[in-house]
Image (cartoon, rainbow, N blue to C red; front, side):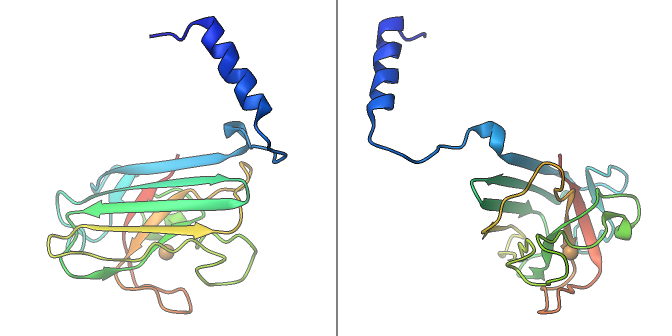
Length: 173
Ligand SMILES: [Cu+2]
């Protein structure tokens, strides 16, 4: 159903009259990335490297939305092992056939390893193997330099950023 033109113009006038001086960013200023799927051994959009820790049927998805000086990321997984911690981060390169193809952690500023400068989405699964995590970083992505994957690791992330072997990977698009 389409709004009558008169009503639309009234709405527009109302919006312009609102007492605001802030510049509202348009969607074009932002960066939005996502990835997901059921893990398989062959499809690099959602690939598994350790089928014991991400068994058949495991699936996950991630969205990364960046605008207005912030980056918000959210991660959902199902079918992992129950009651278990996994380290999860955004990485620089797309997933490949080899676990290391996804490269190192994506960093906002080069060199600093922590959850402020990197995007960490560690989870502890529930008793059915499901988990969610979200993070908010106080910096925005620019379209010329973005993370290209999310990597699920075998252990919780330590302060030095290590989290054990790479279990599975989602490529971001
Ligand atoms: Cu990682």
